[in-house]
Length: 277
Image: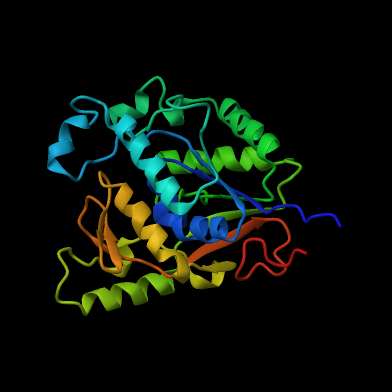
């Protein structure tokens, strides 16, 4: 009897912590189910803000050592989530966090957005050929919230998957407008929060009617929380919530949502691999 081909999932993210914030539950679920899960991170996140005051001198404005520190955080997060394999696009440190548009960091010689899309797509295409994932996940054309590195990760991913022999489905990770609104409403009812609760419009989200796939990650929140805690320079973690350096509370969702943008979606309403024998 021939054993079925293993399920292989590859996710492309811009910075350390993005893999956990948007897809951590999904990674943990499929890893726990035996899928081969690869995370590709495009930069070291050198331009990130830093939450713990005692680590402030790691920042790009001081010692410029944050990227190396965040690499350690990412390794711990990947271990917590059960990631099978982690890769940096082009090798560790090849591409640098570009920061936001119009900032000096965007002009750094190694800034991700200054690199050649053809070169970057070629680097990802090489990984696709080696790892042969059936499912690839990245961001939409707005990068989720407009960060230039997220947009570039989208562009690189879409260029690389075109013609990739193994890839049967491509998804964009998104946040449900309905889930976000309901989660924020529950947080506003709590009197114990150390963070402000934003208006619904302050968090990026996607209309529910656009969402094609909703993955139940309720059984894997402990792994996601552990991974969030690993990213201590970037994330506060509370009971059923997290906050970034802006100190705005965000609900910890039990469902992670996606939009199918390539491939046959038959059977994929609740499972990235759904409908396949």
